[in-house]
Length: 609
Image (tube, rainbow, N blue to C red; front, side, top):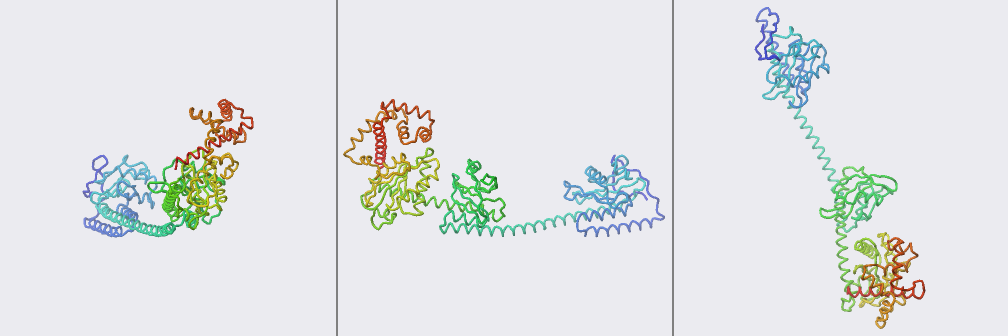
């Protein structure tokens, strides 16, 4: 019986001229065989359509193809993820239950080059070498299609004389395989989608639980702020919750608060390392992992800015990068809570500073009417009226004087809020405080210690007025404190009481004002005028030389080279035309310097008044 017309093409475009098998003894027997084969294909199709996946479907189709054709090669090549995806091959070859990898590779390279619309015959040299070596010199490829979609190929191959003449059963099997593969791909796609949805639902559930826990922790932190707890309390709570040490730094990388979170003592990063990592960086709203040098070597830290969208208040660091999702989210949210806390603290401090400054100016610069300010009496803990002392603090920082003054004011304010009562504010470049007499010694000692620690490059000095019995007229006490703080840098401990100034108290005796001016002009007038005309600082150099401990110490204090100091002292001797080595002349010159300092302090207070 000849081949049925299936529209097959040869690789060279011509139809193959193959001999058919020997005719069956009788047409009825051939028809019965074909019908039986079609029934078997239909039955196989029902199995393929119920297969759990495309791989099983392809294996069933390859087995059916081997049974129908009885050829050495019976295979199915199909696209598991569409025509643009990878090609998978399964089947039987040369009597083996599987196909050798070399043959699979050849079929994978061959199939994309086949006709996707019509069956293809390949013979002789058109058959890949690995197939020919396996005894296959003729290959038949049937496209597996559903509508316009190419699913793969049904592949049969063997010796030319063994190829079947009637391919009706092969085409019928191809039709069943096409629909079964299509259904299997749809089923697998749906199963993958259901599985992905299940995973997504599980992940969302886990995320919801993590988010609920993180929000609960955030609410705890916010509640601390709403109940008026300070930044240190918030940091301690945050460290306990995430189980890691936490440091809070201000915008200038100074430590504001820290807590170890039950982990024991952990070395903090060195200041130079903080400057390297944080200086010049834009605000970072998400934590980043960095390695910072500590006294115990390099350690990993999580660092993020404590900031709003408009302003950075500082930095938050955790001494561990091994945080779970909840702890990581809690740490990240802590920056906003602490930004809120620091914003509140700053707003309160600014309000207190404004009120204190206004009250100080009213009391000390002669803006009041002489009555006792009730607000000041309350600040000092007096019932109605009581004694007071005025203290002036000058940071004397060679760097940013405005920043140093703000920092010193913050230190003084913290000290007063933590202990003794008093009022502090800034007038001009000095930090001025009004204290009870019994708190003066204790407060001034703490002021000096804490300002020195906060401003390592500064040399703070403090001047203390005489005690005033009442609060109604403190302007003279303010001027006394200014004179004292002007003299203080020349004293070893940098703290001077006006009571101890001796001869300098004459500055407040108006009857002797002319004589004071005459003394200053007689001994250092030429030097004062030279500095004014030439923009030099020779008066300052001479004062530092008298108050210093030799040339090297004086040069360091003035931040100049010893050779420069030697040159300046030579110019001073030339301008003054005196022998500074004589004790009497040195006494008069040094007295004139101190009197000039006091006159400047008094003149400055009068201008501010």
